[in-house]
Image 1: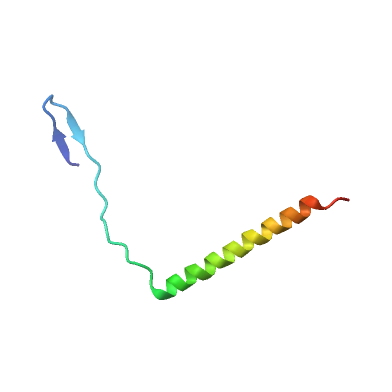
Image 2 (image 1 turned 60 degrees about the vertical axis):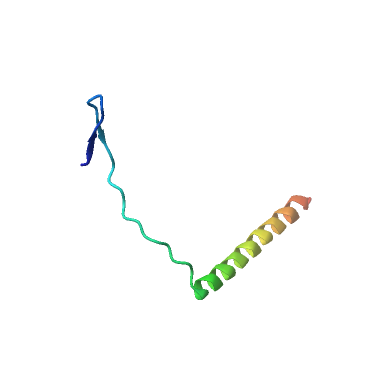
Length: 60
């Protein structure tokens, strides 16, 4: 463990730093998949809102 001694005699214990890496941008295929999944998610939410609005207006 790396310890650092300060002027007052106190010891500081620093956490081990994790290894870092550069993130790579998504490929064209991944971008296309993100667009498709986003579109499906928007359609699902729109459908659920439509059903909720219709169901709240129905009277027995």
